[in-house]
Length: 126
Image (cartoon, rainbow, N blue to C red; front, side, top):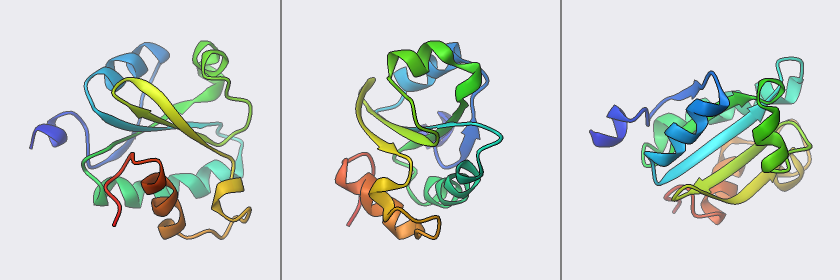
């Protein structure tokens, strides 16, 4: 219940860099998708993250427009879109950069992404 009140269980966009810090502060596990509207692969990532957000309510799933957040992209050294920043206790622990870890294909399964997030211990994966 507490998780749901903090926005867990859904995949949603945050409007600004300032919101990012607030969101990350209030949850132990956060997956943040840095995306660009014009990048097709970001839509593929969105589809999988929407499914995982409902399944793993222990983790908060967010997206942030990389073009509107230059400070964060610089600070987190985000160069490739899409990139998932995996944040635990307010600190970025790991990244999923592009689709390299996901079989280097646009057709990767939600299970593949779930496994990768489980490897980073950002979701409870069995």
